[in-house]
Picture 1 (tube, each protein chain N blue to C red):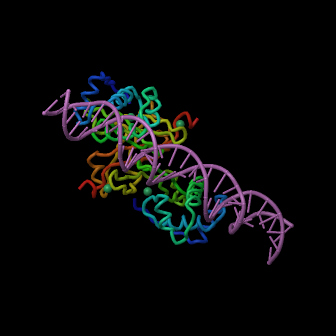
Picture 2: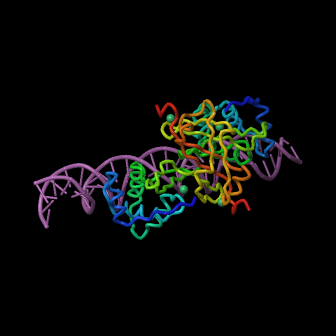
Picture 3: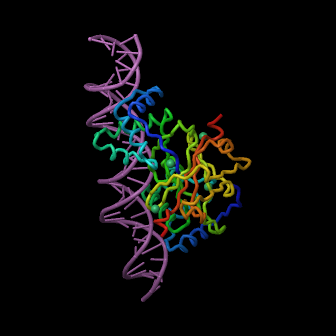
Length: 148
Length: 148
DNA sequence: ATCTTTTTACAATATAGTTGCAAATACATA
DNA sequence: TATGTATTTGCAACTATATTGTAAAAAGAT
Ligand SMILES: [Mn+2]
Ligand SMILES: [Mn+2]
Ligand SMILES: [Zn+2]
Ligand SMILES: [Zn+2]
């Protein structure tokens, strides 16, 4: 999953948040700031730990992650391990479809895969969402390290 | 996901369980009996409800689902909604790979897809598990009913 | 029939996430 | 720049799903 990374300034992040109708607050800016560094989707726990110094409330973080997802700035996915993970959904790239992910069933490591790596053919009775390419894909298996 | 269904007698199920090294008990037979009727993977809650009359313990059911999964009789998957679902893994068909599933992000309905519907190409750096076709795929999106 | 190990049933605990609400803050407007 | 109102925060209580401890019961080997 190689793609030129966009890094936005705090002022740009604040403007981005406001552009969605949400208010720009410290916790929200902190979340976006952290996620734009991330190379894989992050769980609530991981984000909370990374933002430890800010000492922000668990519930506030949960609510912000959901709010930011609702307005389209983040994607929220479960990779087969009962944990929600969040990822910046970068509209600057017109990236409305999310790329597929590979999650290790042993160690839990998550890896982003190129969009091109999955070809879903749509048999007759399959959901229209598949024909229209409106779906997300999660792949699980043993990562190279755990398989060794 | 059309495939001739195998329906085993209670005696056959007991033998199947024993063949894995596990003891054949009432709860285990009941679980397999119920799952061999199922047309999609079932959650713990759904199985518990279906087996209500037997009045078996929640924790026992959880442990049995995991034990039966560990010995390879069931598959356990999370379809992106934070609920484990279990499905009979029918070795009689040499079905070691599981077929992909489609789960509606709105109503939660799960649909089995034919194995042939997914083609995962393996880019250079991708996990070996993908090259070896040792993985499971979960697709999420809006089902036809919810999209309408 | 007896013995040993596995399994059950009930209770306690854990983990991940959600909800209620009063106080604090953002930001539109004056 | 000050004021007013709706949004957001922080804390606590709560929920849903799943896991763990353990004594008693049952399975299956002998
Ligand atoms: Mn990714
Ligand atoms: Mn299926
Ligand atoms: Zn791994
Ligand atoms: Zn639906």
